Length: 307
Image (cartoon, rainbow, N blue to C red; front, side, top):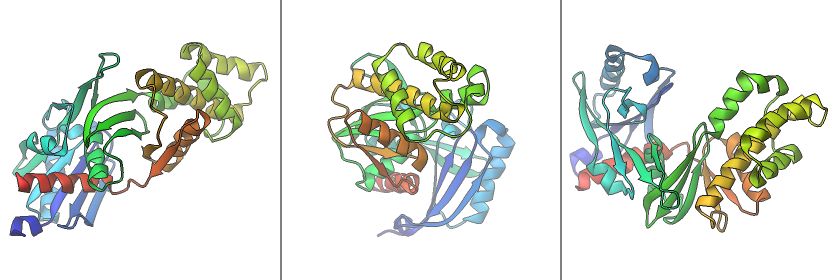
């Protein structure tokens, strides 16, 4: 093993609202980390430069520094563009966007872009590609089939032969957050969404139709008319949104529920998706993902050294 391969690396996951950086040893173990609520959206260029300079001073022995997320977007330090699918780990390593953040060299991971076969619609992701790469490198997901990353913007990703071939993004999480924090439907929600009969009923209603807009307003009518309690409002709304999302997924990929689907994300939302899949006759497999991003950075680093 060369000296470069033995030295630690830095991996930076820098999104719109949060900054997470890791010092990773040659075995892929995290030696130190920094986490701050200092996302790209709230910083100017001098502040971004100061953040990276601070890491370089804290971890001077690191030989390579990688970054993913919104730092590589058009509102970040420099636009890293998108790698068109099908995308492999080797292809991502070859398309790293190398920049200088002040006096510190950083390689930014590009996002992924696809055009789906079934509907010819474009889609994009940025940040999740590194997490996916880590899951694949660890053997946590099969080389073929669907993987789901539930969250604010949930990603349904189709893998084939160890490559990302296409994906679907659903804004169910953001829609739920906005509907329940302001506007008409905020008044019909009291408490969090939980698994149970109310969630299941909302799921089935949206999965079968009618249109989601009609069903969402109907949530208010149900509360006003006494058919639904405010305590169950969040569960009903979550069920509606995830049910509509799964209907979209099955229109694109009719065989989506034919095999177990790995779920990668926060435990509470993964539990809702696992419940939804079970209700509709499928199976969700929640995966521990706390180290997926760091594994992804190490997989990229190894690909760089091998090239």
